[in-house]
Length: 265
Image (tube, rainbow, N blue to C red; front, side, top):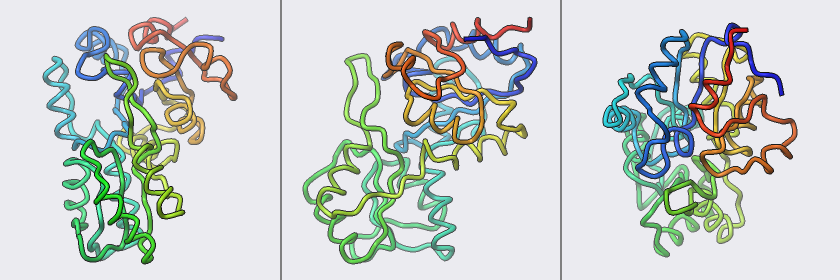
C-alpha cells in the first residue's frame, strides 16, 4: 500500500468516535496532532454520524482537550438530517424525534419542532432513553404515513468498555415494528462529506477521509470519490480492513500513526 504524497492533499475530514476519542478519553496527544495538521497546511473538518450533540458542544469538548476549532469545522448527522428535511418540507413543521438534545435543537433551529400529535416525519438517532412508549408512537406515525428518517446506521460505537449500542439499534427496532426501512442521511451517504468539502473549499480528490468504520466512514469517502484512511483505534480490526473492497488507501493504528505515514517524498 503506497503512502499518499502530502503534496496531493489540502484537507482532512476526520470522524470523531474511534478516531479523536473513545468514550470520554482522547486518542493520542490531540493538541500535538492538530498542531501537526496545521503545520502541514491541511484544512480540517470533523464529520460524525453522532447526532446527540450540536457542533458548538463538540467544539467545547475539543477545547477541553486543548484543541481550538470553530463551529464550521464540525459537521454531524443532525445537520445533514435538517438539510434533508428542509428540502422535503421547506415550510418546516412537526416531526416526531427519537433522539437526544443535539438532534432536537438542530432540527428546531431549522424550523422542525417535536410533536406528539402530528408528524411529517419520524426522525430517529441515538437515544439512550429509548422506551417502549417511544417505539409505539414512532410506529404509529409511520403507519399513518409519516416518512421515516434515520440520522445514521451505526449499530455500535466504541467506548473504553467496548462497543455499545448505537443509532442503528433504534432504527432496527422501529423498522421491525413498522415494516418500513429508514432513509439514511448520514454516512455512508455523501451529504455530510459534500457539506464538509464546501466549507473547506477543496475537491474530493484533494481530501483524505479518515474514519474507523468501513461501512460508513470509508464507504462514504469512497462514494464521494475521495482517498480514504482507516484507523484501527475504533471498531475495525486490521483483518477486517484488509478484506474490504475497494480497500482503503491507507490503514494505520491511529491518527498519530497516520500523520506519520503521510510523506512529502
